[in-house]
Every structure is written in structure tokens, then in C-alpha cells.
Image (cartoon, rainbow, N blue to C red):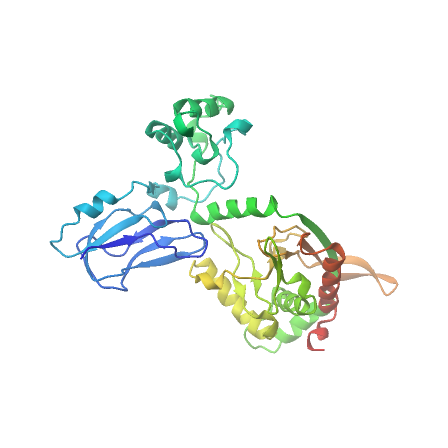
Length: 410
């Protein structure tokens, strides 16, 4: 009996996947559990497995194509079985991406984007899937060619159908690329699944979430000395300043559970365990692996796990449960020389700490001017969950522990 191979939801937030590579060829015999293809989700490269025995009779989504979850990508059947009925059911929803765009170095998008459409041309709420939008075939083709999002255009045709004149109206409202700029002067790079998700999540966070920010400056001399002393023992793993910060934040959250929370719309969920997200920069964007029950782990355990998670995050090998479910997050750009910054909250979390660089500065210490290692921490707070004084008390505890690391064992 023929079996449909569908684009599966390989991560909790996945809406579509890009086929990176088919590991089985048409005509090849497969068994249930065999890996058919590698699929890029919004977070990682995952394996698409066969759900039945048979022959991979037809591949419908070539490598490089992007397919919505639930769409048909291949068919497994007997060698001589008629699969024409299944092929006729297939929706033409895959979007091909040029292989060359995936092999070229990443570069910032320089394509001129449309000016904001008039209020009448923009629909409210979340964008709809393209295959559910009422639009004429000509309008769909023109939208693809001109880089227009049909979900953001209201139609003037029968029943709200988007027609050619609606696209012409939007085109007329956006500035044209100056004739003086030749096509060779810029390059358009298709969005990866991760970059699409980052764009969507930023809108979900910075728009609805009422951020406010608190900054403290921390004396890092004792934390620095403690790290040097531990690393002088010659044991693995070597401890980083970031490891110490993760341990301190996890411990401080147990003393301030009001910051270890999720906004849930009609209620606030306070957690008894600390699942700490640690932002990791990778080639396509940012991913936040999670240190589960970080409050129970020793500094050495945190250092070992943080390195393992970061390495697998950069290799796009994390499992969905390893990058979802964090209750609070830490983002550190200090190693890149950034003195201070503000991080965007990852909903439904209520807070995130942005860590700057440890630098030597002249300061007044014990009544005299001396050079000390200093670091700035900025906490982004969701004001629906965390009030100013609440966030300030939490940051005071973090500062106190970093300035006296012995507080971790007290």
C-alpha cells in the first residue's frame, strides 16, 4: 500500500521546512525508520524518516525547496504500485530556492522593501499561509516575482480576492530602485528558516511585550580571581566568566522566583525550577539552548553542559527539547568587546540579562583611585510580570554574588 511522506513538524515552532538533502534516491528500497532526507527547520537540521517499508517511488520536493508542514514531499510504495492518484492530490506549495544562494557567503539583505501600505491594504492579525489566501493565479505569480507578501494585502476582487490591480497599487506606493544602481551592485539572499523565525519572534516580542531595562555595574575582581584559581588546578573543563554568570543567575532566580516566570495572557506562571536559556550566535542567527534545572548544577556541571550545548547548537544538532522551555535567559556579547547592550525578551519568558565585557577601569575603591575589572549587566523586564523594584532586587542579588563568589556556597 502506498504511503505518503509528509513534511513533518520536526520542532515545536516549525511551520515549514527546507529540504537540505535527500539521503535516499528514487527507486531505492527503504525501511521504516530509515532517514530519507535532512530538513532545515527554524532551529536545526533534523532527519525526516520513513514511516513504512517499500520503494521511494517519487520525490516531490527537490533539495533546496521549502515546504509547509503537512504537505506531500515524497511517496513510498511497492515497485509496481500505481501512485498516480497520490500524485494528483499533491498541492503545488513548495517554493524552490536556488542552490547557489545556499552556498554563497551570507550578506545583509540589500533589496529595497516596499513602503508601508495604506491602512486599507493591510490586514490585521497574524499573516495567513500563502495557500489559504484568496488570490488570482496571476496575482500569485506577480507577488512572487516582485517580493510582495500576499498576507499583507487586502483584495478588491470578488469575495476579497487579490487581483492584479491590488499588486499594482502596492507597487505604485513603494520607491523604485534608482536606475543608477546596477543589478550587479547588490545580491538577494533567500531567508533561512531560522532567520524567518527570528524576524517573526522579534515582532512578537518588541511589539506586544512592554519592555523596560535596568543596568548595574559589577566589580568583577573577586570573580576573576576565583576563575583564575579554579583554572590553575589544571582540571577540565576550564571555567569561563560566562559559566560563573550562568551559575549566579540560576542561584539568584531561586531567591527571586517572581522573575522566573512566564506571561500566559490571563495568568502568570511561576516556576519552581530554573531552566536557563543561554543565547548562542550561529551562522544563520541566534539560538538559545537550555540548561535544565540549572539551580541544582555545580559550576563544573554548568561549564561542561554549556560547552556541549553551544557546540551542538553551532553544528545545528540540538534536539527540540534542548532549545525550548527556558524560564529565563542570559545573552553575553562581552567576548565580542561589547560594553553594554539591551537584549530582547524571548516570550513567554519575563526577563533576560544582557552581559557586557569585563574591562579594566579606574574607579574609586576604599577611598582611593585604582584600576579594577568592571562589567555591566542590563536586565530586560516584561512589565506585565516584573515591576521595577522587583527587577532591581533581583539584580542586586546577582551583583552581590558576582562581587563575592563565596555567596554561592553560603
